[in-house]
Length: 162
Image (cartoon, rainbow, N blue to C red; front, side):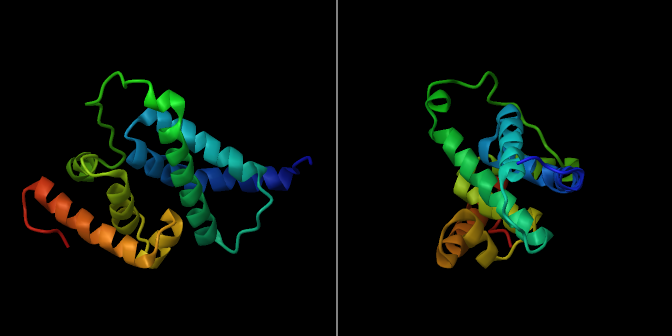
């Protein structure tokens, strides 16, 4: 099926609107900028290929984040990923220079904890939305957020963060 000019314009607008979010979620999960770029490209190829109708931009954003997390999980399970070593493990890229320290410390957490912290504090999602996006129960998402706060507080050298 051939896309129309209107479809292509809508797709371009969606990439412009959510491209940074998808890249940030992928980088947060993978801690590798090149892999995050690849995942971002795959996510938008999936969007372009889908015939799914979205209720609104929030529904689209949640779908994109869920697809991003799934594609990151697939990459981590891949043969290539499990049989290669990164060139520089100390490479730290931040998308927001004001929070560079906290974002760089986030990489010390397990991916499940990084996801809930990032989605809750940086993207502004509620626990029930995070649970749906990450494919876990609300109680699990809530527990992960609580544990992530505690672990991040220990990493940052202070009391449990709020």
